[in-house]
Image 1 (cartoon, rainbow, N blue to C red):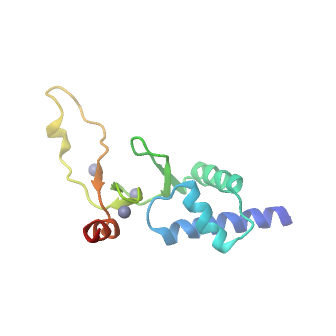
Image 2: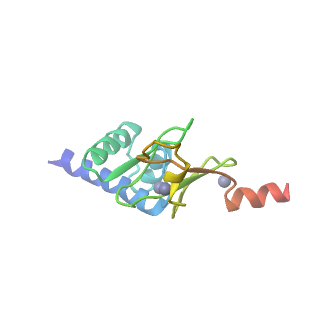
Image 3: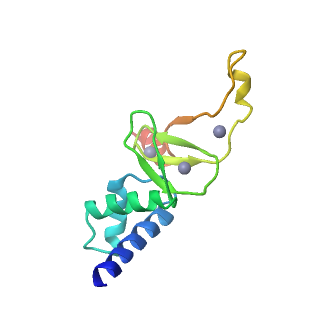
Length: 131
Ligand SMILES: [Zn+2]
Ligand SMILES: [Zn+2]
Ligand SMILES: [Zn+2]
């Protein structure tokens, strides 16, 4: 029973870390944020919680080309991402140009798309200007 409670507390720490972050997090970022709440939390627990929460449909994986998978809360709806070339953080991009079916070659049926924006976040843009 004690084990079960600890498990729940660790999961709650990971969920609130994700809510507070408001951007897709790597397991390492989640570990760091969750340790603020539950100091004893370890990497294995973070990976197990990610797997359990994904199975339950509460987490979505964000897989960007050439980047380690990140995780965000499920249920955000259709949206895209911005990867900062400075700090390598990934941010949500709300909105979508839509109407991409017109780009598909004649005779092709579009079933989905991925759009990733690359550039600098405000923090990195500011520090590269002052450098
Ligand atoms: Zn940045
Ligand atoms: Zn997102
Ligand atoms: Zn879209």
